[in-house]
Image 1 (cartoon, rainbow, N blue to C red):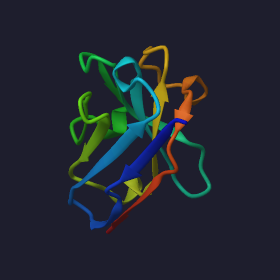
Image 2: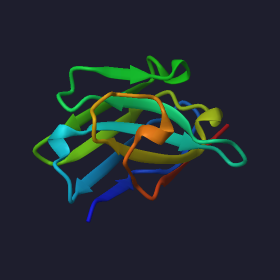
Image 3: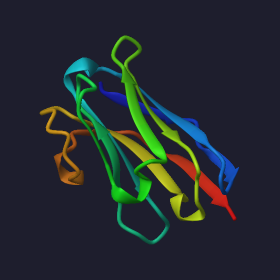
Length: 124
């Protein structure tokens, strides 16, 4: 049974930092691309960042470039999202997701497995 478990969310002031983690089990982690998505209240889920299985390829939505960094540890079966210079508009539930085909895609529908999400709230 595949499980993706996010952690590290919380309440932070604007300009602050958080580091999200997503621990994976039940899958061959090192073969999957891993993505982070977010969903603000009343909005659709949107792509944030993705990293290929090797860690060589990464992609970010423009609004987080230069502030967020995605990374992974294929020994610990964990993907991370370091979030710096947080803004109130970053407030959302953040989800990690696994892409079996390692396409490093931005498309929600192409991810095979999802975590339950972790809340990030940035106060102004």
